[in-house]
Image (cartoon, rainbow, N blue to C red; front, top):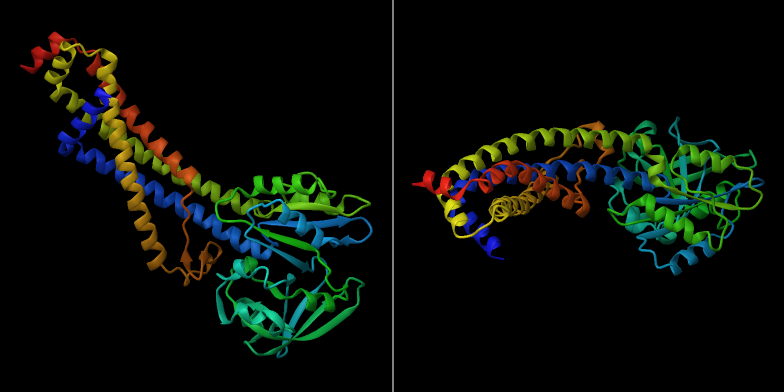
Length: 432
């Protein structure tokens, strides 16, 4: 306790000498916070967009040899999931056209829709509230007002020249191979990146009727989780929980596993638990590579900071030679002298890092509020309405603090060891 008190007192008394070190650590940590939070925010944004497209952060898809897609007991599965008390943000039933052709015609023009989705708009309302609409709204599809309505992307609307309120012809091939058409009213036009833009949303009952499916037919159950949840680990918990009452496939980690499940010759209906990460393997690899690049740059920056700390501590040890000799003469052991300097360095690092975290948070909010990237089409993948998002992961923040603390202690280790090995008589002699 005495050494801790002395260390904190020395840090306060010599605050002007430590100021440059503190500023270097503060700026370094704020830089780490800003760059890593933006990278993780971009990944969370992509996952949010993909979740709307791929039936949730975790999609439950049923396969069997005879009938292919289709969950016959979706209500029972949802009830079992609710019984587990898993912290799910939303659960919604969907009917998705995976194999058959679908097009939208309007005014002599047409566009292929890669993924026509029938959904329960009330169930997924919380998830879709941040979807950016150019015209119309998500709420226009709620209740009976959504009957016969459709939501299309800005890309689709521009190609066919449709606007909200227009009647468009929706064309599809049914599961039996028959051609079918229906007149749908455009209720909303949303802005989405082209990767996830060739999609349309309508009521699940409307899509089932168009495909000649039975009422309530469900191909997917979309599960949504809160930001920051490890989706792959959570998906495994869901898989194990469902495995107690239903047939489930082995763990699915990538697209190859999805294809294997789809064509695996199971005789009975079997559920595949598909995390959105499995659908985003390539994009995730790109972002991880970007994150590695960020940390490589930060390591170089921290190395420069460490050199500055090393030189500063050498000067401090020289200036405090008499003090060191006095403490040794009064009975302080070598290890205690070394510990004294290391505690000063640790306290400096922790205080500066927490202030740097606060500064980074302020900078991030400024970036989110004032930086608009809507004019850059390539930025649409990782922005919402042209705005960047950030996510401060507590685990990553803790890792960053430990990383910075380790760097500072490593830089201070040599001078602290030199101070502890200084003989008292020699130290007092130099200090006179």
